[in-house]
Image (tube, rainbow, N blue to C red; front, top):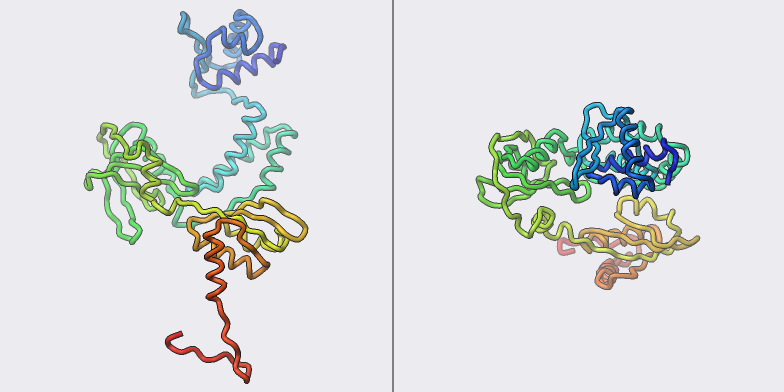
Length: 335
């Protein structure tokens, strides 16, 4: 624990930045000082411009007030790394304009990090790659996201245009309850007033969102929460299938195939590797195995049902014998 006044004040500030109400006794125990010393340290923070509220009585304590002119935030090592990593992955989010904003913020944060932390963050960024999925049309409008977040918080009806999967566009009036994310996808769980039922909406298909100016009473969401409702509406789309593949080649030899697949290297040797691949259905996993097989021998370790699919695929992939002149027989209409 820091014993000098400056170090102690910095630790006190770190505790107060959680915005919970701390009693003087709790702070004294954390800092290993007396409550009188805590009061002096609080006064020192106030002199530096940090608005610390104090409440007297048995239910009293100290809390850092929200201010429009807060001095710079102080982060400990783990918090600084968490912020830097969070900004890096926010840059890959499917929100229009988020990439540039996140990268600008990340540059500012990294410039403030001490060398030891900057090296840790840099090592993480240089060894982790993100697979970008989706198209330009899949991005979410940040303005719509902001409107919906406020509407969910304030329980206010929202109007927007919504493009269905078949391309049809309709105007909706809903009671938004909660936003849900599934990887790069964003969904809104809402009560559709005109359909008198619960609906889930993909935010990348939603446009011209605006508050309707009317409040609504909270409803009980089917399944207990919005995440369950969205998962139920998506059905088998969220059903994940994992497969363990033994590849008779070094990992680098199949990187071009695996870069488009959700995968995790489990073991890598000089001439072989063990890789876990994931997809929403076994058919896609079978195609992945087939693509790998074009580069190197591959065997399905598990699951057994995928191994069965691959066996049937190998049986059905027959090659017609060539004719004496070396040409393949011509296909008929029934082929």
